[in-house]
Image 1 (cartoon, rainbow over the protein chains, first blue to last red):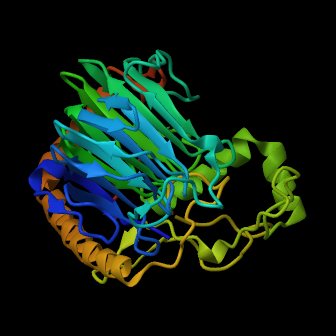
Image 2: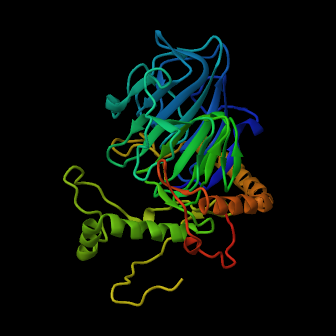
Image 3: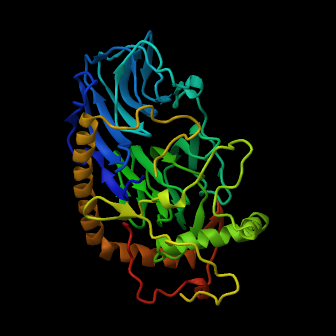
Length: 330
Length: 92
């Protein structure tokens, strides 16, 4: 499952298209920002036209939505800009409508967009994670670096969703006017972000304005960073967002991946030694999740895109060991 | 890799309908075009990017490199890894 590296892309550069998938009512237009080649999971900006109405219903895929302008009547409540929805698969929303129209960002996390008319949840739905909050009014900015190592002062976050099992997260972030950070970063996870307002700069990609978007697979360099007038953005990851900072503009994703593994050996030597000692080629037993499995062959980081739309990582294809061998030459 | 929770069933109908499969196929075709356009645009930016990199390498050796939050360290020249002809690829 993977999406290619899409960076940078500005949704203002393309036109909306009507969403005609079966089940959806007329009056939704969309722009696809990125899509998973295997599952159809996707990120889109959507425009609900003035007068749009939709009966109660659910999506078969979990989705998240941030309302960026306009308003939506959801049942007997009105959601305005800043409203953030986390809707697990099969959880129904009451009827929605809008008099003035609404502009939103929506993430279908595990499958393509779908809408099934229903005034109750799917039998297999888990409503425990369902939430609707106003991200602009109900949450405070975290003013300090939330990670070690952390981003430079002036980049603040609001946590919207956090998966306690995987470390995946969704968050608003902002950069204050005059923000700058002189390092290069990469992560172990994929990261995507959308500029709700404002322009920032990254040394690799230039300026990303309002409507700017990226989907960046793991281990790809980004930064240094700056923003002259500040930004408001939403970001997401599919795992723990550790900042690997460095200052080599020419390092490759493969080198970054290897450096990250070396950092684990230095930062968590007991854990690293334990994994080596036990020669684990399977997911270690987790008493909280005893049924979990892991198939390394299924993992596709999406780091490399081909003309036919397929992608793959540059990871080694087979198990090997450097124990007792010569140091690998570069 | 798909983003999102793995603590619950994220998709209650993993097999796509014919309608959905056709939609995904069309969107993937557009994504490939989008990707190719990005690669071209980023290649065209190379001369400017080389200047940005030179400016960055100068700043971290004078004003400092962000180690953590507001903590900065001036990087000595011998810590700058030689380029040795390596390309400056930014899209993968």
